[in-house]
Image 1: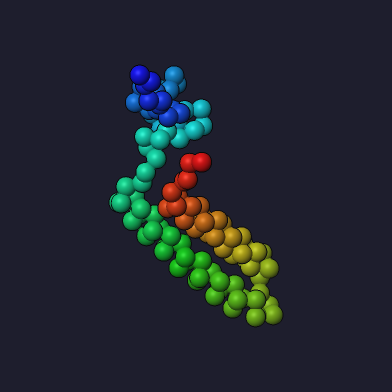
Image 2: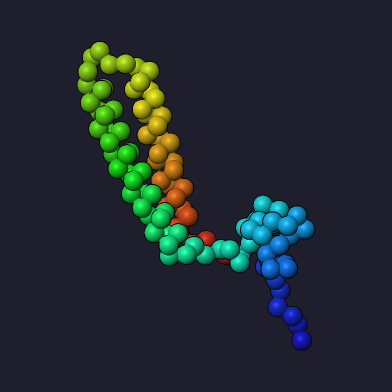
Length: 102
């Protein structure tokens, strides 16, 4: 009979030749694929906190933009921070969506 095939990086209980349990040549082991409920809750809480900060920055940027004597450098830094927050939120939301193995 044929033996079931092991997933990439799943040989020897997730260890590769380099000894890394979670990653094998840049590919995440399928044995560490699922997030626990606690991890998902932590990610959701972090997303909520980042969304609040993002909303606050949006308000601050709008307020500073209305002032004719606003500090351009400060405004640019706030906008950059807001974009970084948006990227972090997107990355965390992507972690909550399970990968579909084609």
